[in-house]
Image (cartoon, rainbow, N blue to C red; front, top):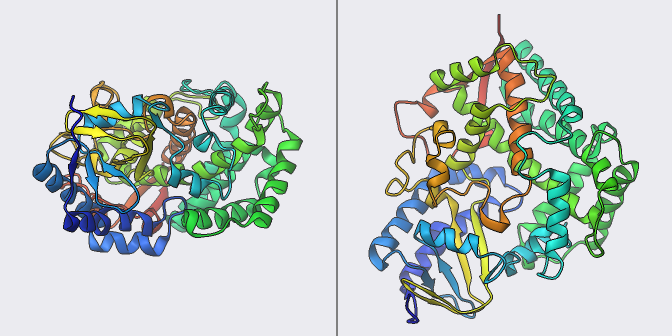
Length: 444
């Protein structure tokens, strides 16, 4: 370790870091995706440019933290997997999870959420999240009640797709959101699209972080509507668990739920991308159907291969483009020293698609999540890592794999055009979920 300053990017490279990395991420929407910007990013190859630029920076400056020349702030791009592992394992001290930019964004709709909680509030809120979400359990302890909600919505969506002979995001998203509202808030929230609409408006505000004033009246409307579902505390839903789970003072149980609702949308994007992968990789799809053979999908199931397919979807196309951590004290690194109050930037798409450190970077390789290769890689953080790991990781994977299992059990899907995800070619760096289209027909 050294106490010398870390490498510092030139002014020209700092500008390129903004134009080739940060601006495309921000333009696409960090909290709520902007479909038009996502489409444009795909056309100009923004994700590929990000990976190639960061590879050049590593070649030019070494693989230690790289300081950007930003007036008034200390931003550091991480360029080595070992540094990613160190920062994520070192949360919340000396690398705080409630980064300045993260607080500015998420305050718009979840000011007391665990992701932006200060150190004195975080342990109680994290513990509450883990208790309700059953963190670490592949099959949630409430799965006997949850599985029927997911199975019903997926079965209806699949049957409608088979009748039309077509399926896409606009068919998938409403069914997925109905399922998630039922899982989180109960059957009484199934058709509450207004709740989703209000949250979407707040999320679009959150894209602007501190550049847009908080709309307090709008958030109160959302909070009141959400409170109605939480007060009902419907048995067999997470809302029922929220009501029955002990909470330490200052936890604000209701204040944790907006993030669960928000996270269900990127989880849906990962799910439909996994469907696209399976609809174009016949060999793996055949193995998935073998895994599903003779299973009763109205009962809770652990589906390891399908879970791995969803993980691989998030690895290939991360739903969290950049992970932020603020340093709280000076730390020494191989490439230099980071001061207190510096912000570490982890560009997940770079680490996930860097073929120099991830051999299967551009292939659909769910077996990496089954045979231990992915777990041994410090570069792969689809749900973050360390103390800040997403507490809903297992619930997301369970819900997504169950939804996919029902679709694939009853229907055959083919991606249009098939060559988009040709198994014989490297997979694209970006995949716009809003533009995915499938043919669909009922299975014999």
